[in-house]
Image 1 (cartoon, rainbow, N blue to C red):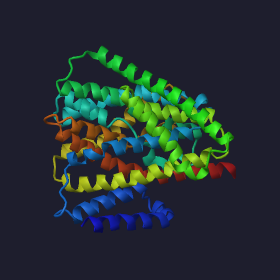
Image 2 (cartoon, rainbow, N blue to C red):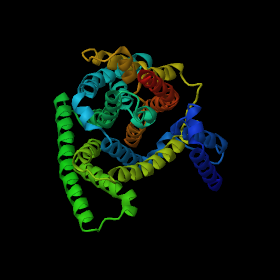
Image 3 (cartoon, rainbow, N blue to C red):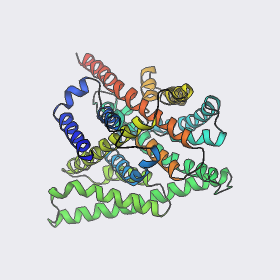
Image 4 (tube, rainbow, N blue to C red):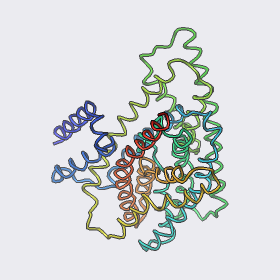
Length: 401
């Protein structure tokens, strides 16, 4: 049966590759396509394969490294000139909207799902980080305002690194491993960020120096490019994590530094090669997610769980972002765009698997609701990305006429 399933995946990848334009015109993203494929395979082979959410924790390192490569690639393509002039937007979303999102998510989880305050907070943190890869059509739409696209990208690149210290702190309390106060959380946060910045700066500087020296001495070959940035990302992420720093912040900052200090004609080719490999790994992860979801989740479950998931994919994100952007000079259209584009993706999957690996009693409900949220977000944000991008495209074309 495994051979048949792999054959189906291969055929699906082939069909997606040769008809990607038509698929996108049908409002389908790669994540929707492959989650649907995974769900179909999970249902078709349900008698041969029995999955539980906790069974998928073995892929956690693969998902972490895939997300790390995606973050690095996105950061390395960031237009820092635009960011320097519009840094206020991602700053407001990270420092104001993100904490409000966690608080609002906690309140609603405690009220709707009758979770304890600690478990409600764990769920809220899991569904707080965003995944810009799920709205890539908007980020790559050149006719959309650059400040909006960069704000979505920067926020997505940093918010998972900011959420993880909070999550680890709450997880330790839930597991009875610590009695630390909130001062301990602040200390943990600054420790992880400081280590990430230090490792990113040192290893990025060393990598850029080595690449330039190798190219100058004609040691560099473009046919090895798919592995160049991947090797750098794996090293930076792993070394940072070994020192108890935030690997995700480290690789994102490293990508920003590469964008600023490494200027060469084939830089874009190097980034795209690494990005293609990460995209391929992401699609396979979404297949696995679809398989697990189809066998473990039920639409007949408590309706309040689905209601919370729907709110988490929309209102719990939208309200805090709109409040945080009040001081900005953005139009209401711009504010609503930033508020909407907060899809839940690989970062939330990683936090869910970390929760399950901790083997804490009573956390299955949290994992299920998180999976509902991710599933709804994949479809809601995937379907809406093209229509919103087209609106900006048409608006730009009218302005030129």
